[in-house]
Length: 137
View 1 (tube, rainbow, N blue to C red):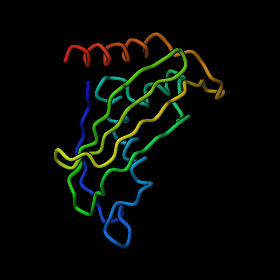
View 2: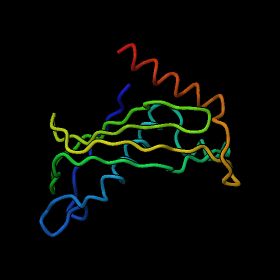
View 3: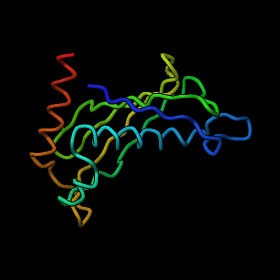
């Protein structure tokens, strides 16, 4: 299932040419996945209260076209797959129907001591729900 959020590009996100600075897209991916987790009922704050952290262990970004100041963007995010210790989250950045950037991040599951840990059952249930809804759509 896809989770969308809207974002208008502020001047602070752009370079001297008025184009979104390339590294900001990784921050956009983070904004999208933070909102996705909130929408599925599992905000990061609740995960952290339960002693689970999800640091990025891998990131990939493919640039297709540039966003500019004042563009209204859609951050589209979805869970692609998961295993016992990680989850892969895909992201598209769109301007209307036009794909600007696509990519993914892989998040590792770690505990309060920053040791890799098995994904808890409650999180796998949320991931299953997202994957099941995607297949049904």
